Image 1 (cartoon, rainbow, N blue to C red):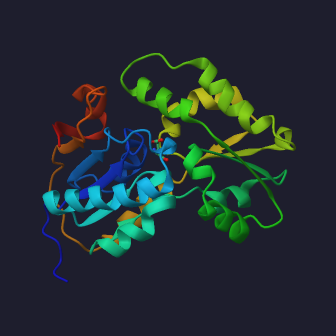
Image 2: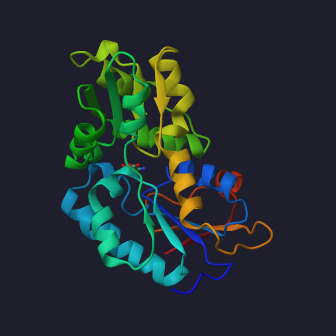
Image 3: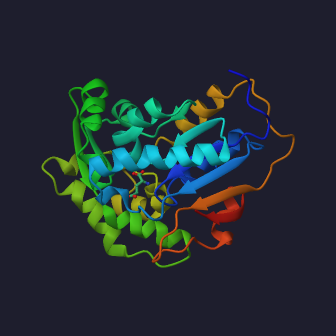
Length: 268
Ligand code: DGL
């Protein structure tokens, strides 16, 4: 394979704005990397879709995006899409694909009580992929899971400068705490890329003794590792955000995306 040209972008993909929480730490490591950030607003929320639908939708859409933007690497910055469709995407596309999966390994190393909470979408928390991660990395620990669509709505609202429903935050934490053994949770994995956008609200609700973790920094390091030695532009270029067209959800104002290095918005 030829080395990619310096202007070949990194493609980030999510159902909505959650993947920005993976883009942020990646830009910190690779500040001149050209960025295309793609959000499937026509499909949001993924957490309420069936596995079959996502296993077909995600590879097809990524295929279109790869053809259009010719990225050097694609990041599925979405736990739901990754835990369901990562294998399908890798089989369909001929470029490096980085997925985002619940950070169970670091959580298992960190817990002192032996009880971990996984906060994700409804689709993610029911995945066998999460059973496998728990069996491999959290043997002997208790892994409690809860799916929270309200946090996805809350995170989208927050980034648009709208109010976050405090009940959504309280319900999400209660959904873990109220399970048998839930009182002892000392680490909560934010297993949906939208949720770190609500880190502050969730930390307040969970209390200072609970550690909230996510995998974004590790994914950023993985991207840097996979692109090591490749050429990049000399200076940062404004990134592109691309949204699939949705009648009831217009793209957010550019001002919400500008802090992530995005300079223009397209719809497809
Ligand atoms: N950001 C996505 C995730 O990490 C999913 C949000 C949704 O579309 O339900 O799982």
